[in-house]
Length: 579
Image 1: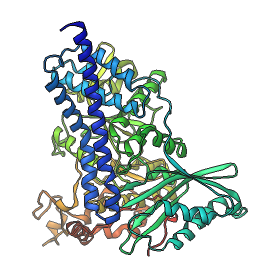
Image 2: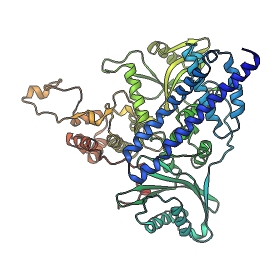
Image 3: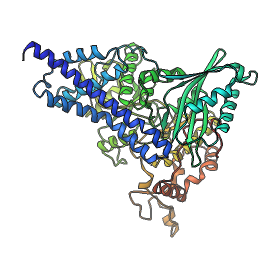
Image 4: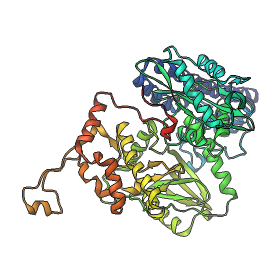
């Protein structure tokens, strides 16, 4: 091939990869745009199907792009030295366009699959190769509506609702206006008139959809202050109404949190939306915002970039994460950074009846399922390198022994073939030990609520030990041990049979047959290693959870597709009462 032909092929290959990215993005938007119709027609099953389809779209698009390259350039695509030139051309063309960073991530994914197909040394095929650099500046702001208040807050609220109305009419628009204005008055305070104090509402142009709700996202400005301003809409049997007004960073942070399902929102450019939202929640990591908007692969890139930038500048070492050691996962953390890393052990304890592939299947299930604010979103990484010097000796020794099939040392680097990263939370058993009674009581009650919330999404946590749950910085209890997780509809919830005699009752073993899917809710209380006062508080609020009838009723709700959705609000005070 002549120099001219080679140069032409390099450009054509770069163009083909970018076309693959554009097709992916167009298909992503096409699926996302259907969310409005699902909301308006109350087609929640269709919404769930689209969410799963969109999650799977990225890998399918990468595979299709690679297949196209192999078809168009069958002899050239495996010539590895050419790929640096392809990358240089590609980078130069996308560097200063909207969502250019995401286009680069897509290129890396295609390149990674090329290398894997050629069985190149896996250490050269990191999921996030060539992304550790300075954070890209914001160049393309989000589209937005500005509602300037001259003297009448009701007027701008009424105009906002008119601009964002749906095909399904409002149930009572004036009641919605009253509710929103009352919340504005509460935030502004009794000393100020909202009509005088409020200067403007800045609202993002695009509506956010999640499960059965829609959200209009923005900010409210008054005098020298501003706050988040998010309206939550529900489509009831009678019509659409405003269900909640979220005006605190904590409430909005939970809504956009790492424990919730991804939003369906057609934002362009994505980076503008991410920075708009981050301005309301300065502590929220960029990677979580990309991920919650459905751009999980870009979220993964941002997480890697941010973490390794921190790692290069910090002085501390990786250590074992706080909490009881797991039988399935070895978990470690960097004390100065808010993540934990999980590596699957080579072999599990005798009580664990699951394979390595089974563990990965559970994590993939969580990735696709409605997390209801109670399951941590997990990023999966392959072939990641860390400096050996960054590991405490006792952690390094255990990694090299109990996870030797996955972990090895090459030169001055520790190479981990497969790991998961998650946000760090405080293990619930440690939280109950270290905090005062009232904080412990609230956390324990939320533990019970977490189990119930998960059940409403058709998830039975399986292993209910306190050590498998954690407490977020917002005080929410989260489940993070997925190896025994299953569907409620797969379980048989049974009452414990009465013993025929005293010997059976005192026996350490069951005197009756127990099937592989049998669950005995009466025994759940055994998982609570707590004092009597805390146990009494738990039973008062969640005693119903210890009956088989409770769980059989929830199972029936799922079998008839009538289980209610778990509301995505942190404080009950943010919500209106039922119609």
